[in-house]
Image (cartoon, helix red, strand yellow):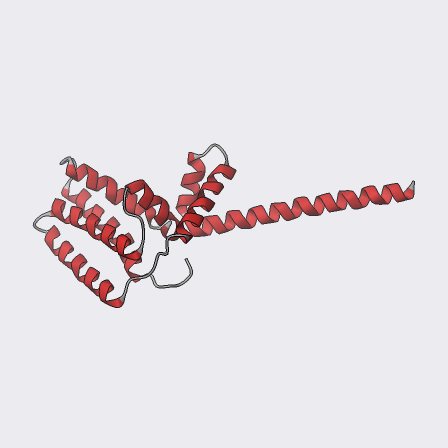
Length: 181
């Protein structure tokens, strides 16, 4: 009888250890995803029925991102893009709507040269979220304002804000080096 009790106690302890280990692994994964995706983590969780589904989507994004071969810009490209950005900002004074369109195109060009997909906005967001989750809201906002500007529904202040938002992602894409992402 005492052997049976000891076996039961050991079984309960093993099950408890497995449960604690599973909970610790889940929390580590969650912490990793929160750190990697920043505010995008909470946005994706809010869009899904369960946290597990949201986290699986984020893990899938990481996997797809790893397959892309994204790389930093050469020093020459970085300088060229920085000069182009300065020119776009200078044009803002006389043609703010056109400058915002140019800013969007410049950000897209940098993304393309770095190896990011640029075929559609949602694909860009998904891929950018892996390494740029903290600046992704800037890009969303800039894109939204750019759309309103195309319909002539944005004020000059809106357009200025779009430039500020585009610049946040542009600078991050430009300055990023080969550090682990």
